[in-house]
Length: 498
Image 1 (cartoon, one colour):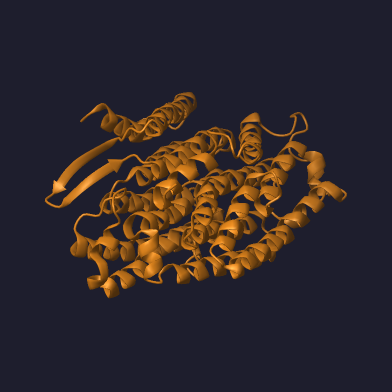
Image 2: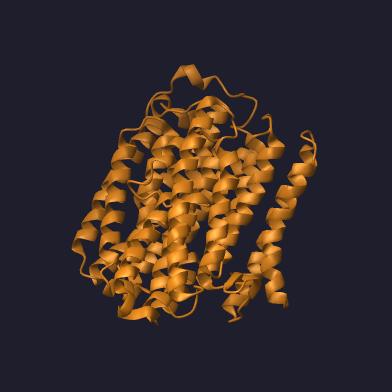
């Protein structure tokens, strides 16, 4: 194993080893557990940055393990893997800090942080997977490692949500397993980064490739929360706020849409998929999910459930960008992979602050709440305005490229979908901001939450502030050489050419 392969292995071990050690620690070992969590997160970030520098300089890192003839595990670095793994690692660090503060007085912290670290290991494994078999392995492990996090509270409601989560995700995983096995029978081992395997099979297997594509979408669409496969996501909101933030911004849902990106770009190839008329139905499905998720969000009074339905809508922007089949739309979709993560994690951090500090869970309880928690609501406002698409925030950049890409592809109806979606985003976010900032406070909560503090514990306040600043920064500095947009342009350039 060369040093590049060792780097990839160390990236995985940097969170796996701390997670396993945490399981062995006594429940009351708070400081060692915190040191392991934050130390592992910082070390992983350093390793990811080293990998990114190497990729930018044209280096290629890979490591293989032969399991059986024709079956091998493969870790591979490419710009798309770097994009997803960097997002996962940065947000894991911030979520770990937040979770330490949020669960300060909670039971079963050893179990929580152990699975939390392993969950991030698996998520980064999905990002670095170099072939379909490795992707499938980590994809299924993600279900198993996130289930204990969803059911962490142990209540009847949490256990019921966990059962729904398992039914959906294991069913999707079974469908994905069939699709992977079928394609491997046709084409042999399927690696990412080279010529698309489906395109190389050609017209001789056209019917099977069309059926396989929709089988893959059905399997991946569960975690991607595509309608009508999204039903588990609002139910999973019974999990603690750090878990909700991780599920919606980094781990499960992003694994699904990342898999769809790999499917279109690396397995089929955009032009070949478009030639088989596979992308038009995917565009329609993404558009329906965008509108349906927003309409459901409108009727929710529970804050976390409104944010969950917003995720159903916003995730489909990524699928929409990939399926429109043009470089500008692909840029908009892929950069939204990062932008949505930053905005959504900000919103869930803030929702967690309101629940943990004041016991506020419903939008109807948020009258004048910005007077009691102005910093939290300022961060929430940044995330919400970004989701709507106000310039110069992150969401505006994504929607601009999606809209320009739709126009370039002569898909005026896609532009109409984006306009309607933006109006619906405003309809379910602006009333929250108006209620919080411009209506008289409700005395039933205004005296709660410990007036001795500035607002809430600093570990709960710092992460949403940092992510809110990032939402603004990646919009203002979108054209900077080290911005997510610049990196996405590199990825799309490899797919479509300069």
